[in-house]
Image 1: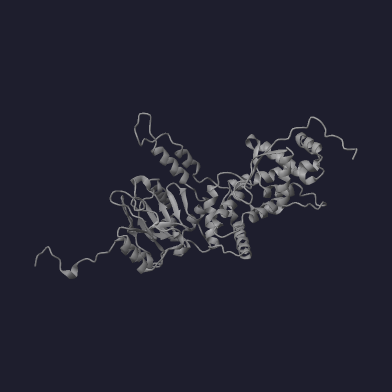
Image 2 (image 1 turned 135 degrees about the horizontal axis):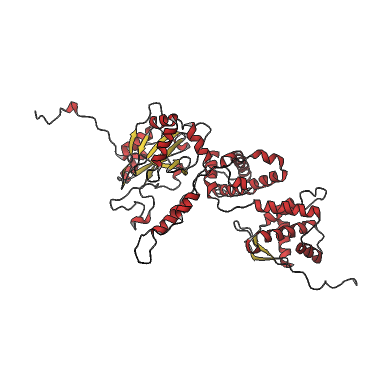
Length: 493
């Protein structure tokens, strides 16, 4: 017998580490899987037919639209993917689709391994949890750590929670082990625990609650523009002085302050503002939940400076109430809002850091000031002259004129946005203390009142919103100038 040939019985059993075999093992653990694009030997992503640089996530993004709801554990379906795309990759859908899965992603290039080491040095409990769970080494030298979210806890995807530390949670996916990119393969470095995945350590839960999701798309786009810049000497691809680094620093998680909802109990007008905000942002037709959730985040974040810099986790009761109101209104109108509260909550957390401009609170502050002015009976001179010369003896019009003048003083160049609905609320907020007078104020009245003020020359309207449309509000500016002569006398009538 040839000494170099081992007997068949003694041959070591080999483990199939192909993407298909690994995908079937993950599906057997209850993980919902989706097909993911792959990278051609030329370096081009399978989603593209043009330049290599056309895709920013080569071999990492899903093939299907609305993939968040299409994850499967069926072996037959998974095998079919790899028959259709023999070089294909696959992804693991995180969140409720995979039983509350959350994947901690530590990226080597961004300093994630240093962050992981520091977390382990600071707390032995974290270190033990990290070593006991399922681990995957990424092609870039980083690591994916698999955990289950604790009961009654949910997180949305988040980036740069700490330097080089991202999470894949509700609405996300992680490229599965066995998948390949140009840099290499995703390799299992810690086997699946016999008792199943452990829960996320409480210390990590606390870190995630203190750091809301960060949207890095703007930063990545800025970096991409910088890399495509051309210096004066004609050298292509040079990195120009970049604002992207500054932007990255500005989006680093800061110490977020708590939002104390109990303060609303002492401010009835603020309570009314919150109630009307919830009502105004409810979906009125199918497939608009995502857009309305963003509007809700924008309105709530703009409520005050404290809320603008606050932790969105504290607003969960308000978002829960909004979701209940949305379900009730949808049922009454006759359509269905797809998805659970967990999905809505995840969308809210994702939308919060994407809010770039304040909205809502400016109008409320103006109305508070206008209400105080009306109570004292000391109208600003331009408003007093306007009301006097036009002969308006209706407190509703006086309040609307005062609000418009105040907005013109606050907005750059005096041009301010105002919708009919906002004008309606502004008049009611301003006249809140006039409880003895039965006011007839609503959105149609506000629209007619604004048209009248434009006709009378009190306001200019450089932009008029489309009737019945949604989105941009009409824009106005203060245009009143005192009349040089009094109107002619009509005593003879």
